Length: 392
Image (cartoon, rainbow, N blue to C red):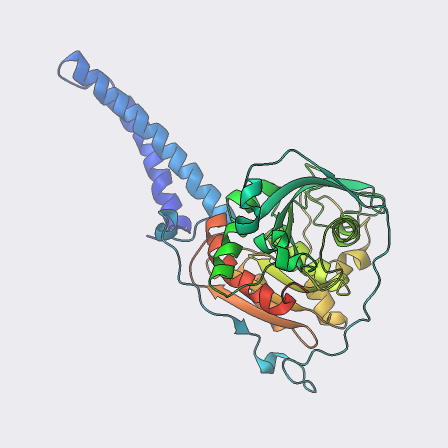
């Protein structure tokens, strides 16, 4: 029986109802010593509670598609296919697949009053380990253009501290969690720094700096990385204030950044790359979605404007406006159901056209969880390295 779907829920619901009834009917009918009767009653009560918990867990999993199979639930990793480039026939006539089109002229970073202040170290590595393992620095970033601030974790690869790279500038990838998300999850759950070290050791990835943070800047509201009319200017913070702060404080490349996110962060990565291709030239969406949402966590993010809502919708943008000159990698599992899962990713891929270039990793099994997302991260880092290059 599949872990997803109503048959399992129906079976668990039947058991959850039957056990309390059985407990009531058998409570006074047990025979034998008092210890035996007490043990039997205790077992029935325990099984009744366990069946109720399992039923709730199945309902939640059906709602969020967190685990797609029994194998995934017990820790079996799915087979990860190689990249698949969007097929040529899905691109409009008149352009060769891979043709980049005209890139925007590079722009000089503007001083917009973004600042960084240090926070207590999280202890990911000691100073003696920096040249071999790298460093995760905890900071607070404030931006004057958006009037917002956020804590973030910045990962510097070992090369950043090695003499031969003393004058090098490093590519940067901004990494966004899902909603609500914590930056520590990127370090200790998905383990982006450790996976980059592994890929660099295997010569599949190049050194880069990570700026890891949650896009939920005004908790508990889910702003979907939007500049809300009359409200928080979250996109401005992520796409303008944060890059300005990082550029002014560290040895990084000013342009040609990557942006990557999981779930809601994947939607944000796509939107930021679409709207700010002068800075972000490569985007990775890990189990993300590509249309605007409105629910009880978001409210109206567009001030009642249907035009503004459409401009925040990557699928609408691809269907009705020129495609941006960026490269994207999208990943999804076929078992991620619902309006933000596999079907939505397929719809987005069907709209791809030049000069937007999209690669995809479609995983046959897996749910919407950190374990499933984490297994494709090594390939995502390799892909980013190929598109961002190494230190300059």
